[in-house]
Length: 82
Image (tube, rainbow, N blue to C red):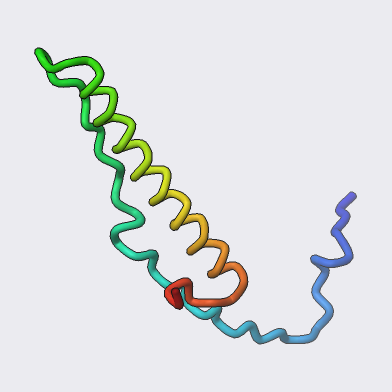
């Protein structure tokens, strides 16, 4: 016995689907991987911790801007309007 879903059955009507508008590219600076500053041997631990915290803050900021860009695109804007 063969069954089909009502929405999948052909109705004899032809449906023309328009191609979707291409999505805008995210700005290059937002899609670059965040650098890992690592820990340099022989350097004071506090200065290395500070370097890593600065790098993390910059990465977190970049991620936030990328999320905002994606949300703008979902809302129908190009994401590059400020």
